[in-house]
Length: 164
Image (cartoon, rainbow, N blue to C red; front, side):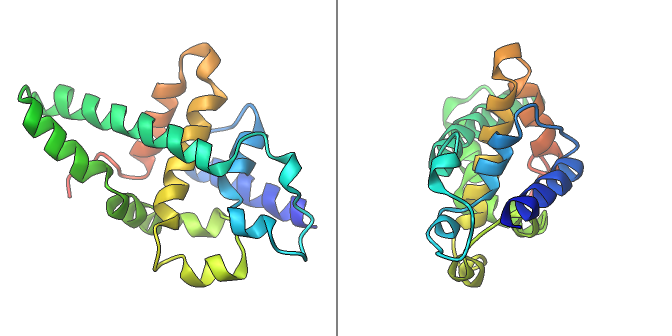
């Protein structure tokens, strides 16, 4: 039951971001939060993860930083290092990513514990979920060099590059 619910959410998220995963395990790992693993009543086992969600979020954070820097340099023709750094920090801060996840309604696609669900809007979990999703997209196709393009497309779908 739990696995089919996770796969249903994964399929809906793929449609929402207009991206089909080659390795669905990556998406599953990105949308199942850690607290859910610790609940006794679920069938999800820690050992089935390919990647820890924190590892995916860490990679996603790096990819988002790179794409934000690229965007600022290419689209805004910024040549001053200090200005690039300052504007990138505003683009990629956890509060903004959390807001992005909230506006995108990413929580509808996440599998989490009851406690995580209660705290989802009072914490940075949605920001970390955005990062883990981008990390999963990047890894899914990293072997054929389209990972950055696909990550950029997903971030565009989420309005990451819109001016606040």
